[in-house]
Image (cartoon, rainbow, N blue to C red):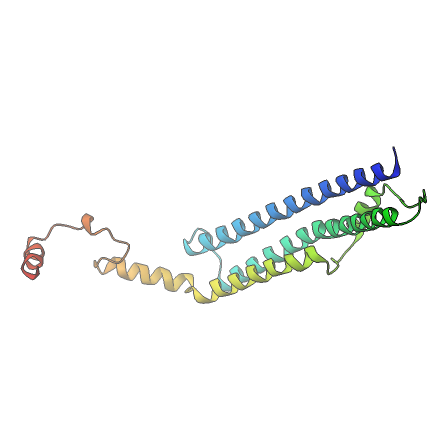
Amino acid sequence: MEPIEQAHHELDRLQGIIDRHEGHMFALRGWLLAIIGGLLAAYYTENIDLGATLLRAALLLVVVLFLILESRHVNLVEAVVERATRVEEAIRQRDTASTDQNWYDGPRVGEACLAGAKRILPKSGMTFFLNQWFYVAVVLVIVVTTVALPPKHIAASKHAAEKSSGLPDERTDVRSLPYCPAQVAADDVRT
């Protein structure tokens, strides 16, 4: 196989790796949002026994764990993108330079993946830059949600008070209330 064909084949393999790991990152985000929504719903429907402070800590811990998991994929994607950039640059230089047969140093797909897997912290590349804003938004939603919504015991006591007063609230279907002819007559007089 000619070096140019090898270079194009390597670019195809690198793009496949990028696509696959970006799909994993998208799935992780879906799971993160589902877990956060589930924890909040379980807290406010009293299906789990957590205090407000413990809920906030648990939500932030979940976000940090998912950020770490996603950063592993980000590291791999960034390393593969760096390799793809070097291959593309070599192809461009080959097209403009002489017919030097040593222009291509690949394929090095495995080395690029290993370099990404060994990274501890993500570099500030394009993928990390785009991903950090997602996590900032998630943390802001958690903070606003847990601060703006009333604590579970206040929300529960308000609902219990409305229920015990016998008065319908906005969630009560008025058609299910007992029939009151005096009220119907008063309504007819007003109209």
